[in-house]
Length: 91
Image 1 (cartoon, rainbow, N blue to C red):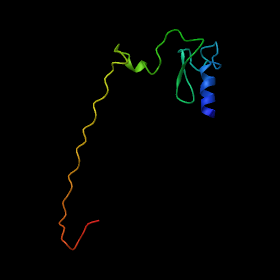
Image 2 (image 1 turned 45 degrees about the vertical axis):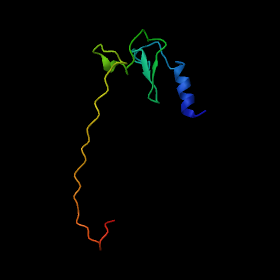
Image 3 (image 1 turned 60 degrees about the vertical axis):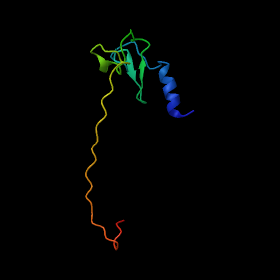
Image 4 (image 1 turned 90 degrees about the vertical axis):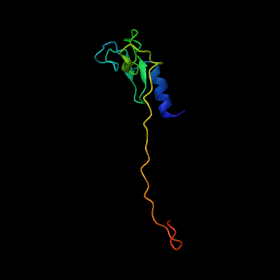
């Protein structure tokens, strides 16, 4: 097992939680961000709060039904044609 996996598994247990909200890694929000960029519920301060990843959708829309951005349309640049003679082969 890798060191990062061990850290992640240990962080999931909530050993880091502190009863004082100002000292707790979640800062009283109910969610803490680990060093491997994953959010975890605080076993002390979590009271049904939405995760910070879901907080981007505060306008009430369903997270699963959120639209994906439209793909960008890429227009290829015109290629200049070069005169080619039998003597010259462009490589």
